[in-house]
Amino acid sequence: MKATIFSLCVCTLSLFSLDAAAQQAPNPFRLGVKVSSNHANIEENLKDLSKSSAQGFSAGITTQYHFDRLFIQADLLYSESKSPVDHALVHQAKWKSIDLPISLGYTLLDFQKVKVHVLAGGVYSQVIDDKISLTDNLEKFDYTLNKNNVKAQLGAGVTLGDFVVELKYLRSLNNLSKNSKSKSNHVQLGLGYMFF
Image (cartoon, rainbow, N blue to C red; front, side, top):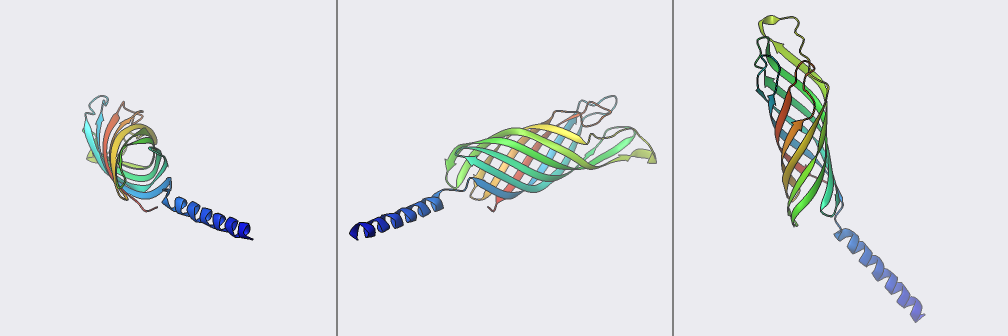
């Protein structure tokens, strides 16, 4: 009888210990929302299409899965950008896209509520709408944006509790237009909030 009571006590204590350990262990999966400000330089254009700059924003969801200091980050973002174009026939280019950035990150410093990390990866961007504003009300001009774009990205960030601030540099790996050899360099400043 004493042995049975002792066994029940040991099992109960073990269950409480496992439950406490499970509550203390952080969830490796994190889910949140993110907004970003995008600034880009467009360069290496053909003919009389010179350097220009694009500005825009992104908003969507962000996820992270942690393996101790190493983590995978994937976002799903809606983006809008516009750029003045230095061309005799084109005034401005605007486009909307769905972006899928995927990165491998590493936490350099971990002070519990404050963390510093670096990350690198790629971005697939699908243009869902674009508009080329022409000068002099021209009806036709053969200048179209590529619908599928790929970028490389490198960045760093700081986590403050549930908030994440990231600064990234992105470089286009393909031409932005089918008619020119334009590539873009991006600087992106983002703010995220992890609610799970």
